[in-house]
Image (cartoon, rainbow, N blue to C red; front, side, top):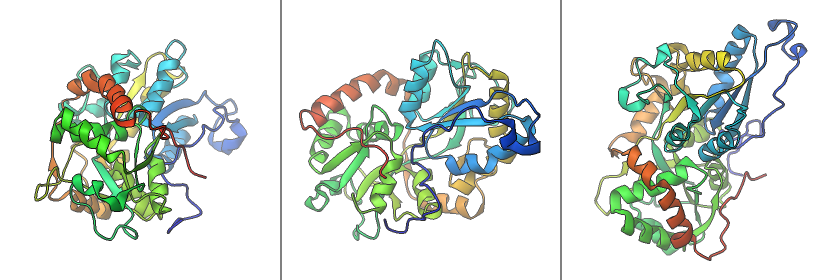
Length: 362
């Protein structure tokens, strides 16, 4: 693996949940003799470094363990959906359109955290069921040590040089995978977008269940181009020691590279086993202290009163400079999501027998 730090798991790699119940002895004197039940967080992958930095202070203050389940953004929502009648988690962090899916499915409980007040109205649900936690942008990524001529347009990815060297995450299980469809349909129109994806499939090696695995595969030179998001890609490159570079593509030659906002959103799970601490966890993660640490992992604070500052904040601004941000109608995306997923499986994948849920590489 190129430039891999052996002491750090790549930030977007899916981890199995550690045992939820931890004895008080494991916490030393920080917890009382009878520790409170854990607060359980289901989260899309990509924010592991942030959680590692900020959660110990919360655990010490509240005397409660935060048990984390990390997976693809669609996968965590699917898990919460299966458990709807007997919820196992208290807080959900995931990407659009899966946060909207969770809301529509009745998985979320309205909770108007006082720390939502500086989140723009467009970046939160009117009823308080979710709000943007960490803002972010959809991107593609390359291994710059292998790809010497950076692709500029979507058409560039159809070049024979990329045959068998492209992969992107499954739109049914990963928000970044669905984002591939969202961006291409927004720029090309639905029919042309699926025609393009069908052509692109001739160069696709496989598809992954989650997006974070792709950064590892890029760095290993198992593939050359993948989808991702700006926060994840910059963090994996800078803090994960992986050889990759985020890029943005234009619809046509000479055009402006384009993308859209793809934020991590946070919400309270309805009927969760530890809602009191779940609310406190949301308040804490949306506090100015935690939001000020978001640029450390190349994310953008969800609150407008917390600046995108520091060296890493400057790197985000530089990466997005000159890139056109297009609006996304998430209501329309939710209306189209099921049809798009079916069309992708039928028209793009067809009977190719290609792998659709490649999981974490060893």
